Amino acid sequence: MQLKIGTALTLEPTYTDRVEKFRCKIVEQDNNILYIDYPVNTATNKTAFLVDGSQFRASFTSEDKVGYAFNTEVLGRKPGNIPTIMLSCPPSNDFVKIQRREFVRVNTPVDIAIEYNGRFHQYVADDISAGGVALLLNKDLAFKEDDIVNLTIVLPFLNGEIRYVKTAGKLIRILEKGRVRLASLQFAETEDIDKQYIVRFCFERQLLNRRKNEVNTIN
Image (tube, helix red, strand yellow):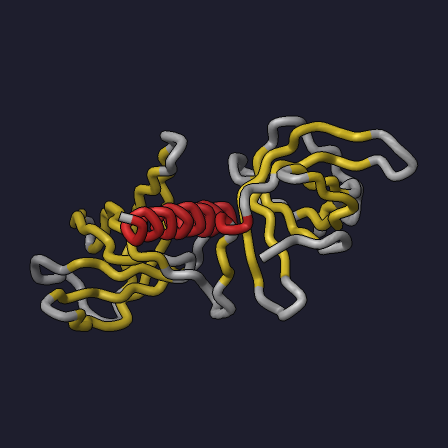
């Protein structure tokens, strides 16, 4: 998958508590550097001045209508008739295809504490998305289908940062996956910033899982 001049990008900050999106276009490309026009905040329609070193998740749609995303960093600015901002661009095999369903679900263990009727219960997730989670069941649940519970989700990022996301969840069903029992919960009333943390975590783990699979294939 190759980027082309004129491709529209959406930039979302990855290390901030602000929920923002910026739109821009690729003006020029030189190996692993992208030159973009000055981005515009999608909420305010005002030009944004990105700080050198800022990190973002960039997403775009290819000519065949497939969505992709990659991590990028602001490297600096280039003056000219059209002033541009320089972004780092990873190899195309580090682009992650964006699934066109509502949320990308990633298989990865995540520690989750559930509070129900004043008591806390510890679980580990089998998979997670910004829309819900599947818990591994090695004991009976203290709650039943359609019950609403409070969750605290521990998200460890690869840079050492740890975020604790708190949200409500509704138990949808109990299901079997091979010999494993799972409890499927749907998130409810999740704050935008917490949803952004989960999306960022899933994207990071999706890329990590892909790299591990590539290494295993080579070996």
